[in-house]
Image (cartoon, rainbow, N blue to C red; front, side, top):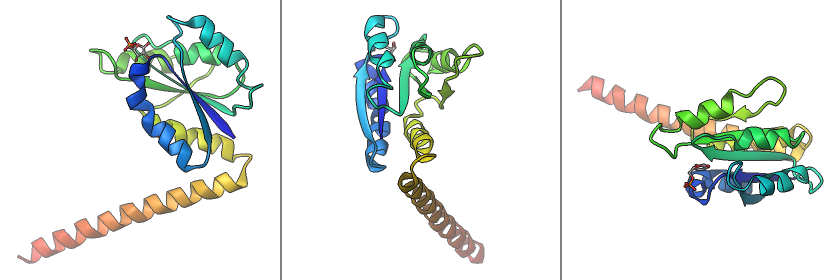
Length: 167
Ligand code: RP5
């Protein structure tokens, strides 16, 4: 199982690092490609057209500004494409969000929140897990751990407030 992360610029890398880390934590292979829909369109086409043949299960495409990369990537493949809008301009990522989320009917891109790299990796894992019970178990454990952490924090807050109410 492996995921390709395509980003429009090397400047997107710091935002996408949580996705790389999260995929590794779930034991999913990951290849990072820097390729731009506007600046290096041939490279985008070359990589994506062969991505299914190369064994990739999902593509995460991240871009900022007039972020056409995820949509262009989706047009070249039947693999599910997850788009991550990057906050890299004075519009705070809203430009990228609208560019990615408003795909015309027929070529969908699953759009994450602005800078939502971690969720992109988790969503990719969930897609792969539909055919991989071992990965599904890891995702279930991840959710259980997360719930336990939230519960521990809630108990802490509640205990603190109770203490305060007694003062
Ligand atoms: C987009 O333009 C990239 O995805 C990046 O978020 C933004 C700025 O790119 P650089 O000018 O930093 O290369 O294509």
